[in-house]
Length: 409
Image 1: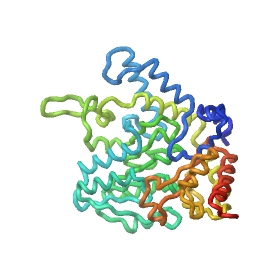
Image 2: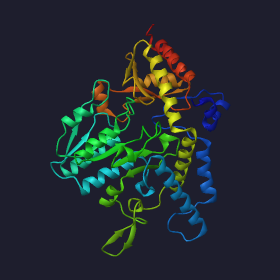
Image 3: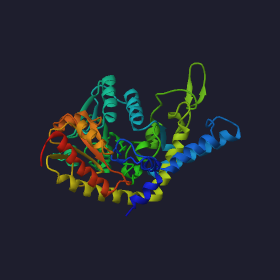
Image 4: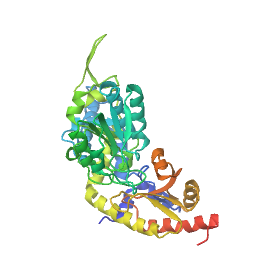
């Protein structure tokens, strides 16, 4: 089992708050995670020792930047189980990755009468791009049914499959309910029926070992900042056959082999999908984050988060007037709730006065809020540097909410 107290020393932000005598119980990890010193040092080292553009400069420092950038790609691709580094496209994060896939398929695959299959629990990043694609192509959006606890029934999906379905896009894990969906089985259902599978892995990659090749997905998107990496960088895994099948939709420098006045030929993978100057430092910082996570061990991280989540769920279930959402088992550390009739933003603000940081709102998942029958929820989300003491402080914090709103006991 991981030692969170030892691990916290790797994260300068906790020392910063402790030195100021201010409490910080950070339980908003589904939104973004804190950054260890090794990631911050990797960013600084790049800018102070190897800052140059990649792939095009003949000088020594340019070659060093290119080598670090491509080594980072290889390390990150291996981390998610890609068979080769060319299957990893660097993007600004999950949102850009999903928009890129939706844009490509809208331009080069989808046509009137086709169906894009989604779930009602999708983050807006895996819903709005498909709405836009449907509008452009006159394709239709359809949604699978959720079970009462927010899980899915793969057999029901098989039974109710529309033969016109060309794309099946879904989360690997919910940012609201914490539900971990059977991504491998869902990808197999799509493959067996000739549909393209697109997986939003933003909430899965930080928490557990992900093997995209074993999942059998066609595309898989993730973000660096949710896995102790920098903001503004992430990745899109694409199976080689898919990446070779489709053309880029963004043009510019670096993604071409030859340009004439009226025609261009594209570069080899992965560069044909990466026009312009990439986030070089971000990629290097994300590789440092991957190395940090691997040193801790993804199996150990998953085990620790699962254990702490069960402890948190048990403590929260005992809080009177608290409504919890999502399954008890088979979940990540994202726990959404409502407390009595107190607005989630008020709950979050009162907890923040005691240094407890949680999220409140619709969590970019308004259709899921509608399915739950609420306008918004509060959310506490756990990562491997959180502790049982912090969960106890969260539970105790509801006492202050009671006092402010005179709820009694």
